[in-house]
Image 1 (cartoon, each protein chain N blue to C red):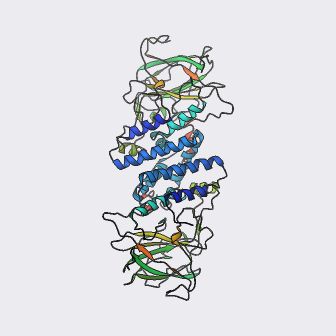
Image 2: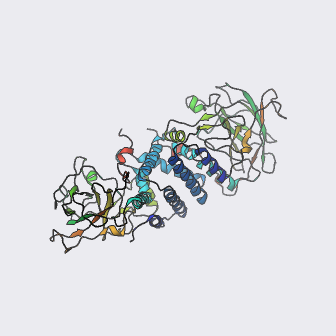
Image 3: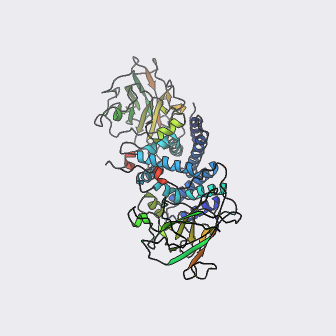
Length: 304
Length: 304
C-alpha cells in the first residue's frame, strides 16, 4: 500500500491486468492503458474535460444504429482506420502489389454480375459516362484470368444506392470477371465527392475542427481470385478539389486517376477512359484476410 | 500527394486538425490522435482486433442509460478516473492537505442533516455500529468551524440507498457541521466492499482480465467550507481483503483506517471508533473546483 501518484496508478492498473489469460488481450489492453494515461498526463486533462470526453464517447455509442456505425466514422476521421489498413497492407502485400484503401461502410455482397463492357449505372444514369479498363495480374505482372472485380460508387449526387433508394435497389455497383489474359473493362458514370455524415457527434467534432468533412470522388474496387490476397482499394479522381485533403485519409498517389479521351487501348474510344491495372499479392499460408471495415453489420446494435 | 505510410497518415491527420480554432481542443485532440496511433502501431493492431475494439466501445456507449454510465465505469477500471483525480489534486491541494479519492456515481445532493453524534443508518441499521470523529483544519492545522461534512456509504449488504431502495429513500448518507473548534463526530454502521456492475461490457472485460472487480469497503466524504477547496475523498477499511487491489484504484495509504476500541478522545468509547482529521487546502483565486465524476446526470442519455 502506498500513496498513489500518476505513475503509481498506471503501475497498479497494469499490475491488475497482468492476470489476463489471453496474451494478446493482455498486450493490447496494457498498451491501451499506457497510451491512455500518457495522453491524459501529457495534456494534464482536467476533470471537466474528462467529463466532456466521456459525454462525447457516450454520444458516439448512442448514435450507432443498425444502419450507422458512428465509432467507425470516428476511427475514420482520426486516421485510425487508414492506419490499421496500411499496417495490414504492409504485412501481406507484395511490394509491387496495388495499394489498398478503405472498404468503407457501403460495400454490399452479391452485387449484380455484368458482362465485359457493361455499365453499372442502371437505375441512376445521370452524370458523365466513362469507361474503366485494364488488366489484373500477379505482382510479377502475369495475367490472372477469372478474377472477380467488384466495384461500387456514388451517383452524380454523391449518394450510394443505399442512401438514394430503398434497400431492394442495387445500383452503381457490380461484378465483372477478367478474361483469359486477365483483362477487364466496364462502364459507369463519374461519381462525385461527398460529405461524411455531419449530423452526429463525429460530424460536430469535425465541424469544431474547421475541417470540410468531404471525401474526394472515388470508385471502390475489390478484386478477388483464388490463391491471392483480396485486394480492397479505390480509385480517386485527380481533379476533385479535395483530392489532397480526404477527411478519412484514404487517398494514396498511386490510386489517383484521371478520366481522359484518347487513352491508348481503350475499348471505348468514344468515352473518357481510365486505364488501371490491378496487381494482386499472393495469399500467405494461413492468412485470414480480414477486411478493415468489413461487415460492420456484425457489430451493429440489433434493430429494435 | 504522396503514398501514405503510418507516419504519413498521422501527419495528415494532425495537419487536418491544425485548423481547430479552440487551442485547447486542438491540443487535446492532437495528443489523443498521436497516442491513439502510437497504441495501434505499437501493438500492430489487426483488422479483426480493430473491429472488436469498435464493437466493444459501441457496446459501452449503448449500455449507458439515464441510470448507468458505462463509459465512466470503463474510465474507472482503466485507472483514468483516478489519474485525472490525482492530477487535479496535485494542482490545487496544499502539500499537507488530505488526499482526495473518487467521488463515484452515488453522491446525492441535499442528504439529510444530522446533529453531532447522529447516526446516518436510519432505515437500514444492520451491521456493526461504529463512530467516526476528528477535526477539520486548514493545511496548517488551524480549526475550520462550520465546515460541512457530507458522508455516504453502502449498507451491510454492499448496496447504496439508490440500489437498495427506491429513489425517495435517502439512507446511509448525511451532512454534519463542525463545531467552534472544527470538531465533528458521527455514527454509522460498517460498510462492506462491493463489486462494480459486472453485467455489462466493462464487467465482461474485467472478467476476461481475471480481475475480481471488487472495491474494498469505504465511506465517501465530501468536506466543504467557504474559502477552501472542496475535499472529495473516502476512508478505506484496512481489514478488507481487497484493500490492496481496488478495481478502480481509489485507495491511498493515507486514507486507510481501522475501527478499533479504545481510540483516544472518542466521544463514544462504547463503540469501535475511527479518528480522522481532514485538512482542507485553500481555494486558489478563480478556481472552479470541478469534481471528477461529479454530476454524471448531465451527460446521461435522456430517459425514454
